[in-house]
Image (cartoon, rainbow, N blue to C red):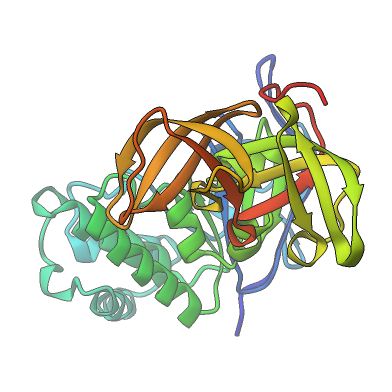
Length: 361
């Protein structure tokens, strides 16, 4: 049976005079794993602490299924928490750490030992059940912390940067295990991270946060391909963002646009949807291809870096500084004038806003 849904409505929060969250709203479906993603100070950890009950909101409500959580103390929310620093009790064995939550809930000794050992078996730590936390590796400690959170069978799981202290390969292994166990139990889960790859790989949906607000809340695929605005685009790797204005509309949705400095290119509605009279084009480095000077946006090659499958070029153009890719078979030298054509598979049209880097049209 799935865990209940989680609802945050009109949540605002302050630290003293500092406004941290501003009218935050999130609706998380039953059995869904969502990530809160953003830079330090965006409000993601505060949101987690509010859900867990460690902080109280200035306004708004938090509901888990039919239950109002907003004013409940943490110990009555029955949430499974996995922390960045593991938070294991150093004087207790692995087994006793996992048993701790069951003991607090009045489960008999034999039953809690049975359930704890079953969970340790699931996370691959049963053979170390008698060890103390001090002799465990970081990955082993996190497996114990995960077992401790899961063994109480909570209606909601919450993860606070759980993998940031682990090395790269172990992070990949652990996030797969977390996702597998979350899906197996169909548990509703909130995962806080600053790592985009981690959030995208593990989540049903991701909420990108900035300055106490959710800027876009969508599937990883949609965020990656169709960001809602320039902030999200930059956050998910669209390094090139140019303001444009339409200078001509042709048949079958072919639209000629002009960028700062007079550079022009054709955009097609079949690739981008409806193209506004004024907007932004956002492109990943692979979305700008360095080639013939007659094609696309004229630019001059600056720094060249080798990426293995391609060369990356930092370019100067009348429209601003741009980052493009080119094939390894024909490397271009600094000072070469090229044309940058836009690959729509790695580009998106966004609503117009003043991005500060482009000249006025």
